[in-house]
Length: 339
Image (cartoon, rainbow, N blue to C red; front, top):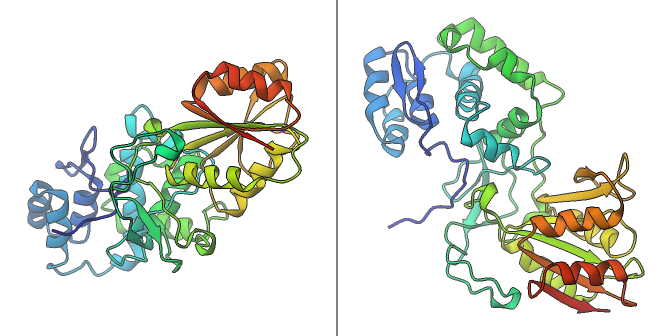
């Protein structure tokens, strides 16, 4: 039996509310998109009743509508807008990924909607970081380094990062069968300056990426350290690489020293599940991650990060008071590396 890479945002996942067009109810984005390949109403009704995977396969056996190339991205965009509509749990999950590059990693050779990858070996034990994860390895991806257009990931990032879209496209289902409207929408997407670019996969080649775990269920790890650290020790790099393999959300401060070094390492590694916490109007150091401002002093910033995190990593030098306090805030849950 074939094993497939798992993406939490897969179009195969069931919708909270079906997409309804011309009285036909589609239970998944995949059903809606597959049915959109034809203008035959009877075929549409049949596709709506199939499972998502069968609908995808069945749609390949029927003649494509003549304007398909000029409307297919617009139709996917419309379906995703419905799935991730504000107020749904899917919308909440998407918003959890702010600042993250979304990649539709797949091992079924689709370089239009996603990026080529191999499936990772399963059942790894993460005892080195004192974390047991029964799902580790199941459906995880290892990018091949080959480029992919990643249209699904790019559409999702565009929807996530452009809040005004909901006012213009949120409930226009009545327009979805109007060819001119779809063509204009697709042309608008293709020339929009805010639309995300094709990803550069060179930094991610060979790395294990977990896209299967819902963003709200990912481990959260706070990384802190002394401002006098001038270089990341080898043990810290090994631990950070393990955290990335786990697909964790990393919380980090904006200080000099360890904070800045870890930020730079993560950026160079192509890891985007990172949030920089700071006080004041803007971070002192941020190499390009999403940031969160905290009212109060740095101690309040650190307290909030530790209260959110499941685990911690501390890179300690000169018995830094702030780092020692973070260790105390999470007793038994912080891996300490002394420099």
